[in-house]
Image (tube, rainbow, N blue to C red; front, side, top):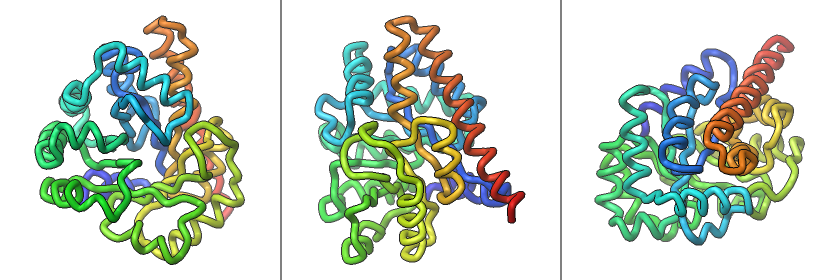
Length: 277
């Protein structure tokens, strides 16, 4: 449903390459630096941006993203400030899709209908709500549809062929494939298993398939980009903020340097694959 997401994947298909999707946590390490990073991501190579909504109990996230959320919350980040970040980003970039990723509790507290209205006004393109199964998402689904916001669902290695139609029903934008079971940042990537999973998902859906969890290096991003429509990297990126030890400028540099490196990996992989065909 998101015109920006559809247009971006169409352009990338025409260019013969996959998308690179970095994840950052809104407000990490603080609002000013996080906004600076967000605005600089497209020039650093981001094709689509995942923006994490900090939450106190992120059950699907490993230590890296949990710590990022805690840093953001300690610095005063709120859901309203996250939406304001997106609105600010839209003043300088009208085209790069933004996907908000997080948990349902803050959305529920805000009010699903009001949240989707506010998100659409800010310029949000899609939502990933990791703790809300398809059987329970009618309220947010209807509110998102009314505002042309895509609801992106997660498929995992344990999503069998009986369960997959339920996951894919009403999914739009793209399908997010979690490359292993467990929490973010907790395991290494098995690219052969990913390739097999992507082929299976494509036999069930015409939507682009994005792969996340476990991608830490440019080489791994390239491997995923050669078999999927997008590579998503989160933990490795937010760890650059941690590694800066409170130095805001170093955090910005570290994040953007890694994003450039990962983006080049994605781009080179698709170019190599095209050259080999």
